[in-house]
Every structure is written in C-alpha cells, then in structure tokens.
Length: 115
View: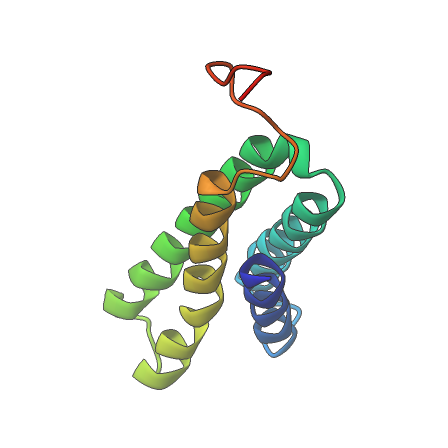
C-alpha cells in the first residue's frame, strides 16, 4: 500500500511540473515504476523480493534527486521540495516492508514440512 501511495504522490507531483521542464520525465518514470512495483507486489507475492528491491532502488534515486534540489542553488522554494520528498519516502518504506514481508504459504528453506 505504501508503494502505491508513494508512486501516486510522485506521479501527481510530476503532473504539476511543466512538461518542458527537465524534471518532468524522470519524476513521471520513477512514479510509474513505483506504481508498477506496488501492483506487482500485490499480484505476485512470491516474487516480493524482486519488486521490493526495484521499488527501493527507484525510491532512493528519486529521494537523492529531491535532496539534491533541496540544497541546490537553483531551488526556487523550500516547501515544494519538501513536499516532493513525501512520495519517495513512502515508496522507500513500502519497499522495505515488502522486502521483509513473508507471503502466507511460502516456506523458507530451513522449515520442515512436518512442523
């Protein structure tokens, strides 16, 4: 759920950026990747490690981009930059939770079948 909300926030904030800005395309792509990762976590819980890892990598890259613009001399205002960090943070939390999550019915290799 965190991945879906985080990806949705990133996509919505990307839609507020002018289309001719160099920030629009990377923000939109990262938001869509996080949304796809969230959907795939729900649809294919057995491959949660793959999709969670993808979400974590994209969220960290997006968060680093946001933090760069927070301290950049071209940053126009502090508030939009801080609001833009909400989506990647939610996606990062969702990716970490998805990575630690064990789907029901999936046994680890060291569990016995008789237990």
